[in-house]
Image (tube, rainbow, N blue to C red):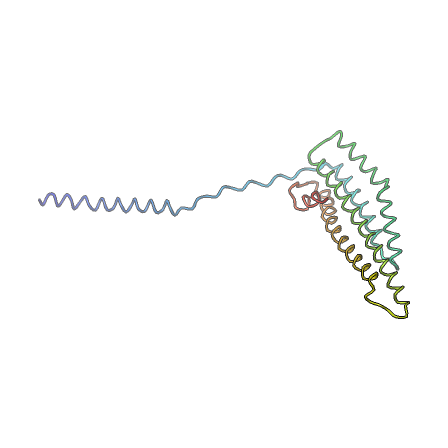
Length: 218
């Protein structure tokens, strides 16, 4: 009997120790955090050729010339309109922009790379965005000129009517045109910045927010 108790006394502590070890292993396995999958590396930036970078800088500089012409300070709304109208006509029939475009297209016919094609597409979108900005400013100046004309005529009346429906409507149209011009500027600025910066850096990221924003504009 004593022998059995002695054996039991040696066995039970061993069983208890084994149970403790098993519980500890199970608890450790449950508490160990699962590893999150590694994030995919960002796509490499595309290398734009030196030729397209040079053409792109000239292109952006030419676009800036028209914007500065339209933004020039003048003494009257009429003069500002004339400047913007002239810039708009030059924009449409510009020999410099067409020459740059022709040269880039000829280059791409011989050396068609993803980076150069993407940059050429960016310049095209930049052209339309900048043209829309100048056009929207012309529309705003036309409405502002109408408001000024109505206001002047109203001031000459013996009895002024600040709530004259014609003047009120003209002011509302001018405010609407001003908002459209601001929206056009918001579309143009990212394109101009991206086209300029990509030409300077020599690289292009097709996933960059400004690049995607520019290409998404209608």
